[in-house]
Image (cartoon, rainbow, N blue to C red; front, side, top):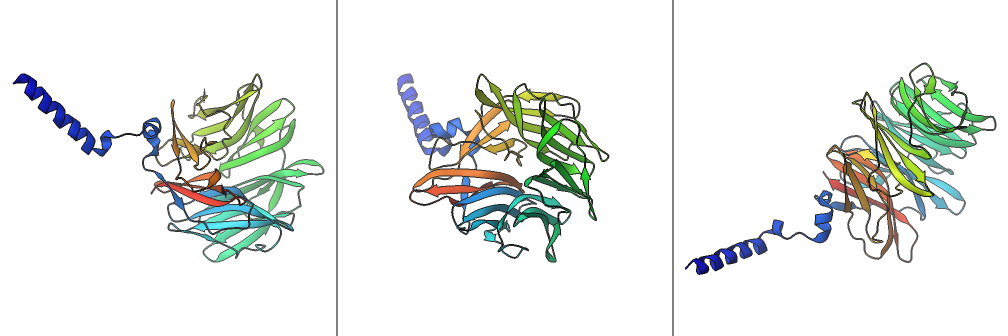
Length: 359
């Protein structure tokens, strides 16, 4: 009798395991717990391929802007897309939309969206408000426009002219040129939390250095970066937390590092991301860091989720006949993550793609 009872119990448990979806876990799902909910594909109106994606920024679930440029036969053409919470559409109403040039970083300043625009070689800031588009021209033409940052009360454009490095500052009414500390050869990137709290990373005679603007002057932030390293991005958060992402080179091999400042001290980690470029790193709605990584599947994108010491991976939707899927930028849109990038289908040039997780 006891033997019969054991057989019955075994059969009941076996049937329950077959009937329960939670009991059937694919190896991929087990290896990537962050893949639930799944990434889904969002249609994007086609551009003139090949295309290059510059930036993606979102304000809540109902507004996001993606920038870049098309490679036309006669040169580059600016490319701008808007997400309204339901669908992507192309915007061609901004000043200079039909002229040669390209669009760069997107920033939200109050109720406006600000976008850097190289308009036929001359720089300007596009401003989108409820009344439409306007433009703020730069006070001078630079030979290189490297990066742009804006916050309520202040905006910066960094680059170079024939005299060297340039940091142009806009206070809402006029432009000025700001000085950098001695030894700065090139400002590679800039970001701002407020008009009196901006950060930049620069190339100097002694290596990469972190600079900070305190409302009065740019100074060395005294951040001890890993030896033989560079910086890809600095993520500033309203809480005061700062995260630096970059690469360290050891014996000719590159590995990604992350440095986090909690308001008192810096903490450095080396998550298993290989030599991932961290420029697209964002803080997700779940509190973890998210960034696109090089995929081992030609027909799917791949994303990394870094939460403390744990790093997990998830894949985008499968794309028929795709040979290269590359998310280039990420943004938090309410309770969702949006990505924007390119996909190359066999036999064609790279065109636009977008994916969403959650929301």
